Image (cartoon, rainbow, N blue to C red; front, side, top):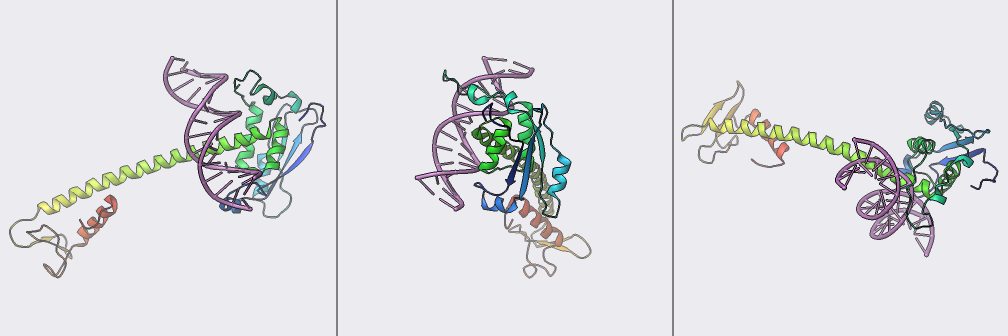
Length: 237
DNA sequence: GAGGTCAACTTGTAAT
DNA sequence: ATTACAAGTTGACCTC
């Protein structure tokens, strides 16, 4: 926006209404209008009416849904474009102002993707280039994804630790059960009133009901085996 | 000076 | 062909 351009005082952005958004994402998008108001006196603060926006997001009726932002006056802003990629060829690092970052964050919380018109409008409001807003959202999405990946990784690590422990415990249990076999004939181990474990003395495997005794593999062993198989991803131990 | 952060860039891909 | 995006990379800046 040029300095002598008349200031936009109100802008309506239709969120979730266009741009290249994956189909599955598109379906989730709420249709939301954001309204940006520049403070008449060139406002030095930015405030977002979160209460209002959140409330409106969950509002069931389809009335116009608005978020009012009081933005820094463009004239006050550092224009990154002029300083960035400056003439000497060296790439200068732009640091977004607190206000710019906060506004971008606020918008991002409401919606992680914007269509071109929304980006342009936001860029004008923040006195940034369309490209800068675009890049910011791309990088922001990447950061979010990375963070989520880290969280997922931690969760899987814990699952893995639990399964390893369980695996160890079950292996021990199995070892103990096998160690209890004695004598050349099939061994009948009384596990409880109702269950009997039969182990073949030659092959050291549990016998099926009609292979050894009438009782068959105990529920306890069956259960343990099942657990173990599940925990180590094996079949037929 | 090493390492982290982040804006900006490059490249490949999918949707239109 | 165009557009938008994700993923990966680069380089400036900051903190310790």
